[in-house]
Length: 244
Image (cartoon, rainbow, N blue to C red; front, side, top):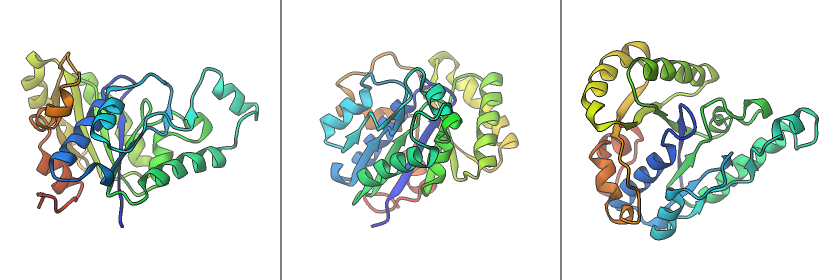
């Protein structure tokens, strides 16, 4: 079975990567995939607090590993440089093995990144390093805004492309609802001029309430911002299950 790996990176911590992961899982379930065909993993993290996406996976029975085997605790970088941790090759191998393990027999695996694309570079296990070790499509989750958001996207995506990543889609998240139309207008106009090889997948408004109701309505909510056919079929290349 060919497993599709989708790596979700972001402009910074707290930009809403996990919310995007949850929305994509909900879309896949709504498209007809059963929970056993999917998986979610956050193989590298700085935060061990439980996220709503982990609760969503528990409720929907999607296989989930929300805290992987590489946790960047305070002092980890100093210990690595001093030679007190595993080597880069060992760390990267452990991370990739955990992804392949949860992905065995699955059709789609969602990989939740840590911080921005370069986080982990100090130990040779950045988001980009991990993604390059697999055949991944990549979603970059950008912060809200126009000028600063576009500048940050160009910086991050240029780094990703320089390192060798392709098939990059972009979603902007946590946009104040009053500014959604304006931000969408100007980013849609300018960003493709600066990054012609990326796919702009959509813009998500900021909502304050994420609770148990997501089990029932997260797919519809996410689909109201990110078209399921465009994301899953046209961009990611998934067919069947009501997709064409």
